[in-house]
Amino acid sequence: MSAPVAVGYDGSDHARAAVDYAVAEAKQRNRPLLIVHAAVLPFMTASAQAALYWPNGDVTRQALDDMMRGLVDQIAEDEPNLSIRYEVIDSVTAGATMVEVSRECELMVVGSRGRGGFTSLLLGSTSTQLAAHAHCPVIVIRDSAPAGPNHGSVVVGIDGSSQTQAVLEFAFETASLRRAPLVAIHAWRYPVVPDDAMPLVYDPDELATTEGTILAEALAGWQERFPDVNVERKLMPGKATTILLEQARGAKLLVVGSRGRGGFASLLLGSTSGHLLHHAETCVAVVRTREDQ
Image (cartoon, rainbow, N blue to C red):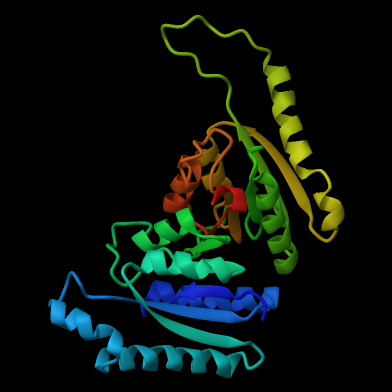
C-alpha cells in the first residue's frame, strides 16, 4: 500500500478543518487517508488505577472508536473512491505519537490548535512538535486569510540551504496538483554593522547579483520538470520573515524548509520557519530532508 496522507483528529473544530484539508490532499496525491487520534493516557489527570486500566478498553475507548468510525463514515459517503482508515493510539503526548506515525507517511496535516489549546496561542504544542520532528512534510492549516499580493498561489521561500531542492520539489508538485502559479521568493539582507565597528565596504549591486544567482541556481531545471507550473521569481531585500508573511497572505500555501542556511544543525526547527508557523495567515508546509532528521 502506498504511503498515506495522515491527519490528527481530536474532535475540535481546528482538527475537523484539518481532516477536510487532508481529504483534498489525499485525493490530489492519489494516496490513502489515515486519520489518527492520540488517546493521551491520563497519568496527570486521574488516579494511577484509572490510568492502569485505560489501555484495556472501556466506555471512553468505545466512545473514541465510535467518534472515529462516525467520521470515517461521513467522509466515505462523500468520497466513496477514497481509501480511508483510522487509528486510536494510546499516547503519552499527542505530538510524539504523530511524529512516530509520520515515519510511514507521505504527508502529515494538522490543525494549528487542538481541543486543549489556549485560544491566545497561535500554534499548539502538538503542531509545534510535529513540525519540528516529523519524518515527512507537515502542513499546518489555518483559516482563510485576506487577499494578498500572491492570492491563490503557492509561495515558496528559497534560501540556498541544503534543504532547498527538497523544498522546491514539494512546492512544484503541490502547485502542479493544485493548478496554481508558484511564487519563488529569495529574501536577503545587506550586511549589518554594529555601531562600534568600522563600516563594511561592499558593492550593493554585486551583492544583489550574488543573491540573484542563488535564486537562479536553486530553480535551475525545475521548470523543465514541471512545465505546467507558471513560476514567478522574486528577489527581495529585507528580513525573510517579514517578506514571506506579507507575500503569503491569501496564498494557497506557504512552503519553507525546517532550517535555513544559517541555522544550527542541532536545531530541528529554525527561527524563520518557527516564526512563520506561529504568525502566517495562511497554511504553512514545513519540509525536512532525511539528512536533517
